[in-house]
Image 1 (cartoon, rainbow, N blue to C red):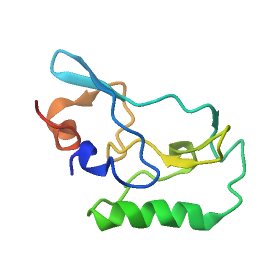
Image 2 (image 1 turned 60 degrees about the horizontal axis):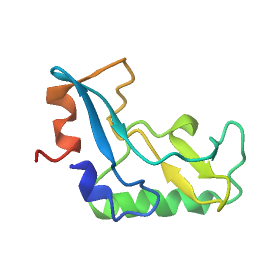
Image 3 (image 1 turned 30 degrees about the vertical axis):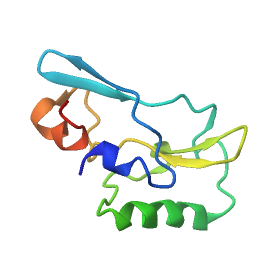
Length: 106
């Protein structure tokens, strides 16, 4: 699954850039979300999370590291977003061969 293929899905932020150093991708640059994760701000409607997950499922993607730290609520609008689509990788750097499926080669 390519991250750009998720761009039309509800609750997915647009990819702005890819941060690389040598053969490693250090991260994906997405817009800043002013708000809290669910550890700090309660999600009042669980169906919001289900709608986002269903939107991702329609394009064949299943978030493999879905936890409270990977869900954000925008403070100004209350919109909910999923982040961290890198299959549970949380080390400092993502090996290029593992993350290539998330980004387009252009």
